[in-house]
Amino acid sequence: MKYGRCAAVTGAAMLFLAVGCSSSSDTGNTTAGSGVADSSTAATSSAAEDSSAAEARPVGTVIDVAITGGDITPTNERLDAVVGEPITLRVDSDTTDELHIHSVPDHTFEVEAKADQTFEFTVDVPGSVAIELHHADRTVATLAVRP
Ligand SMILES: [Cu+2]
Image (cartoon, rainbow, N blue to C red; front, top):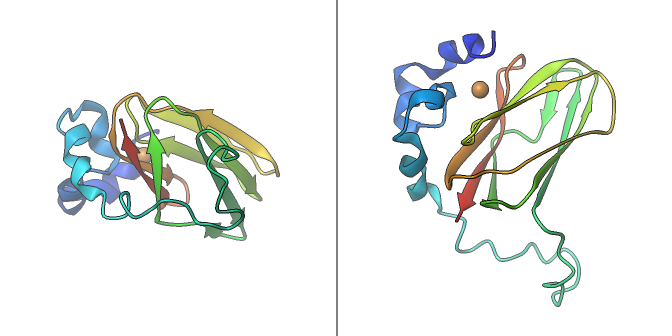
């Protein structure tokens, strides 16, 4: 079942983007994503707090995901990440679903219908990594993973 739902989404159109579910055997996928980085150079920091926060910044990437009544936040978010640094998904959900991380290697997490679920993973190969909710058929975020 893991890939069944994605097969419908992937199709010929998604192959062009190389972010769909077909990546498990597609070795070209990892380098194909390197041109995506339109935001990676400009994305210094969101400056939400102190501009001197270079050292206070937590290691890795944290993504807060909320699934409520069929609404998913975020969707199609663009985020930067770094190879080998932890990426943490914090999920509040009112339904079960399956998170699929299109990294190399890929990861699958079972989402339960409860708050405060935490899933952590790392990415070994730079490139574009889609984070999908398979049951809802949504892409939560796409990570531009730098070496
Ligand atoms: Cu998938």
